[in-house]
Image (tube, rainbow, N blue to C red):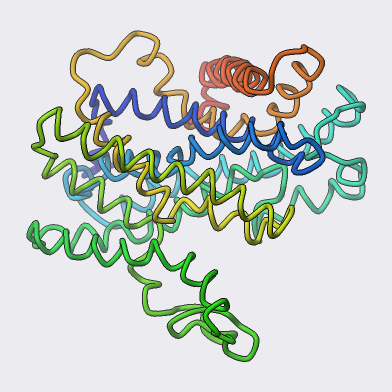
Length: 384
């Protein structure tokens, strides 16, 4: 191990549980996509997928908050910025490159050789020709594609790693009230997507056709809240809640947080359905309601994290086994969701059961694959 590098993994029982829960919720969210994608062709499938998909939206914010708990303050684990970047970013480079190439190949093989008769509304023949496969395998240098959809998280995580040392330097001197004030400002930024949707209805005509807010226009994407918005807020929130955990009684937790979660869920589910009614199948509008950095998803994430933080006792054996596999499961699972959907397509089960069974099956199969890959040193770096 490099001299001066302190990277021992901090073991916190409830964090392991939270990692496994967040990972399963991600798998469940992607299992819902095949049902949400039915839209008005099958309204019941759409509503079922939307209901469950809306419920699991805290999945990614919870993952980010796990990162905040484990990495902040950075100085406790890394003695220099160079060591931090080389270790944290080094862990992401090879998985990002390998799975950006491999996931499109897996999708191609599934559609052409495993189940060409797939009924998934997310797949089509023109997506999986040899001609279409080639650019998918190298375009990762610009961005992810459909088959590597889940890898958007790695690009975002790289950005968080780049800024974490800056945050860490401020946190060393910031008071509790300082952090809370910045979190309030971040909270305002969570409302901006809805303000932007509503502004045209109030007469806002945009700036030369661009409907950005507060300084955002065609030649500037960095508006007022750009630097205090996004997932960095979840990092700060996690640090704040770890450092200053809620000292509420169980009764107050239930009285405040359960309604908060339910309201957030109602807005998330109801908003998605309403937007579909006005903008059928238009993801540019639909995704606004499902934004991880939207106020409604925050209202679900905060209670989930707070309740998980109250967990006591030892980590169950199954959780201890699965926790180290979660990063790999996240990387590998997405193409397998197609098989999970097709496996139960003609089962006669209600849609909600098909969603859950598909997610459970994909989670188990992917966990087994990742466990096998972790047994060989050459492949271990690709999933851990």
